[in-house]
Length: 168
Image 1 (cartoon, rainbow, N blue to C red):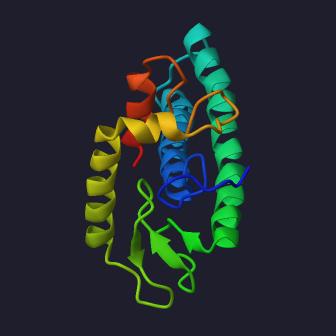
Image 2: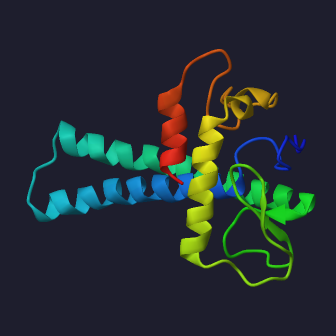
C-alpha cells in the first residue's frame, strides 16, 4: 500500500490533498446542518423539503467521518516514509510539495509562511496537471477505483480530477 511513486511520494492522494478535501466536505456538511435550524426559525412547516434536508444532514457527515480517518492513516504513512505534505505539522520531517514531491523544507527548519506554501503548492499542482505521465504512472488505485489524481484508468474524468483539486 505504501509504495513510493516517482517524485518520492507515497502512491495515492497526499495527506494535504485529503485534508483539503475534508475541509471542503466539512464546510458542505455544516452548511446543510445550518439549514434546518434556519428553516425552523423562519417558521417553515415540516414537508418533503425539510425531511430531505434532515436526511441530507445524515448523508453529508459520512464523507467527513471517512476523511477524518483516511487523513490520519495517510499522515502516519507519510511520517513512516520520512516526510510530510502538511503545512504546519511534523517539523522534524522534511516537507514536500503535495503534488510533485519536491522537498520544500528541510527537517527542523522553520515552517513556510502560508502564502509561500500555497504559492509553491499551486505551482506544483498546475505543473502536475500538465504532466499526463503522472496520471498514468500510478499503478495503485484508491478504493473507489481511482488513481492518485482522481482519474479512473482508461476514462476521461476531468470533472473528478478538478473536484479533487478544487479542494486544494
